[in-house]
Picture 1 (tube, rainbow, N blue to C red):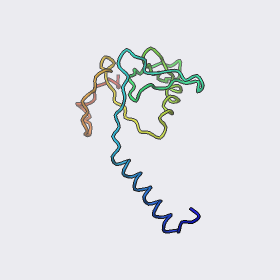
Picture 2: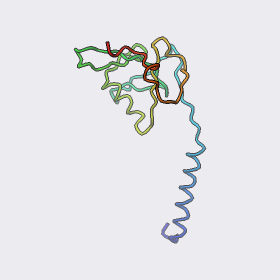
Picture 3: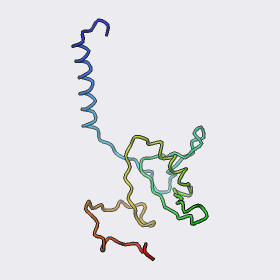
Picture 4: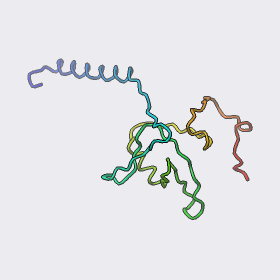
Length: 131
């Protein structure tokens, strides 16, 4: 670089930026889902935390009640994670995005149909939260 002119350095930099933009525009990602019956998590001893083995997690949300300050627990396979443990596990994907799709517990292995629209407050109100 010492022997390069400012124009040459700028040209190299611009080519690098264009290559990065091209890679980002052409990147196609396939999320890996661990097959049902296989463990979705593994324990990472050096980090003292659970980590996902794939990119998709099937899990069930449990209400722990008033004893835990109404914190939820997340069950993945047979492992129950506190909100803190679940949050720590998510840090393995820090910088990524995440979509959450709520499905009935007995439909965890099915890909639901997703409709992008505003909810109809009457028709889409499927839970009895007011009781």
